[in-house]
Image 1: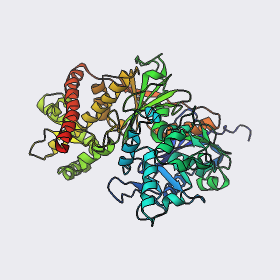
Image 2 (image 1 turned 180 degrees about the horizontal axis):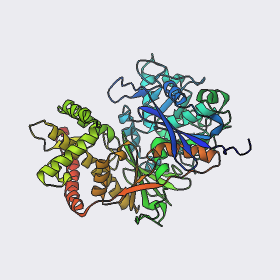
Image 3 (image 1 turned 90 degrees about the vertical axis):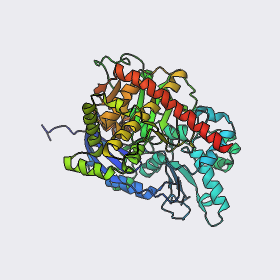
Image 4 (image 1 turned 90 degrees about the horizontal axis):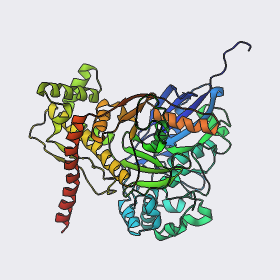
Length: 542
């Protein structure tokens, strides 16, 4: 109609996290217009086993839409690096001992394959150089080996016999949307040992006892790959379009792992005018921290850098033609919740937070400020005599030891709300020191990181952000658009439709000279906690 406003284009970003599916409508300028969220089910049938259903996950993806279909130019998916198992008819295959077929996803945080991971590490195969020298139980080869070994021993179960397709969850979502089995380089390079230049290393899969996955041109694990954001198939199939409420043929971008989507959403942010050390410097001077249930530390380089205990280098794992190193902590937000909600004073905390109309962590942050004011001391010095080693779920980086466990030194006999607040503070400090530990390893290997870019749920906690700035001594940047992971997913759809999207920086946080001196001491204690734990293990195993 003459004189009518032009149609506003949008991109849909779908983020499948650990416990929920979120979706967002994102504008060409990278602004989130609307969001929706649906919870997904997690089963824990045994210790260290975490299982989901791909049917449940896709259904929740379909429930998060409801937009004008002719305004959507592209769709992008990101998801946790969980393992999906399907049969030759693309029906779910059970990965749990109870045989429930719908429960066909081995979650990223499932550590059932720790023994298999250790055996793979012991082979010393050359592909291990691309994962920091140590195979993690959170990667797919040990999970696959566990499935083969367990279901070959268990004559009743038929998982390994029936399985025809093993997909990373991000690739499963792309397949459901487009019917294309093309794998994203992000998933297969970062979690499956694939190399873009050398393809699948057949000697590795043979050496670890999974040579049957090489059959039919690796059809079970992927014979076709593509760069993140490249168009997948012919876009949305008729069935997927109907389920999502969008047009058939809408462009779908090759997917990303959720943390990598967050990295993509922040690491290229425009920081001009903030007097940051990374201004007018290559993007390789930046690290993206995606901090939520767990945390990932993403650093990129022009050439491959091998960092002991840190995953990578991965070519085109996040940014095309650049190499990615990925450090991480297996439990961050999850650890904070565990420490706080498991404390005797937690009911009192809940009561006080509800009374004040606050979130529990907002209340704890304010309570700590009040304690510091009463004592006339800087807030962070309140935990001078309380120290935490945060690896309650093992160490992902840079020690790459899933057998390590958490430790707390300096607990009093009392269990008051003040004690809970101090334990919370010491836990956040320990996580920040863990980030410093990863930064140190990356720097020693050749990275030159001058600025941290944060996103994810924990980046909305001002205490967590400030302590990271203080502990690392680096400026921290947070995006103006707080849903950076969703924006990163939407960027994939924009790339697939040959459009462009960007986000801008909102504000930054810097550390203080006083806290740098304090954290040098705190970091020394932190490192000794690890040394002492190893000594205790050796004594008890002698």
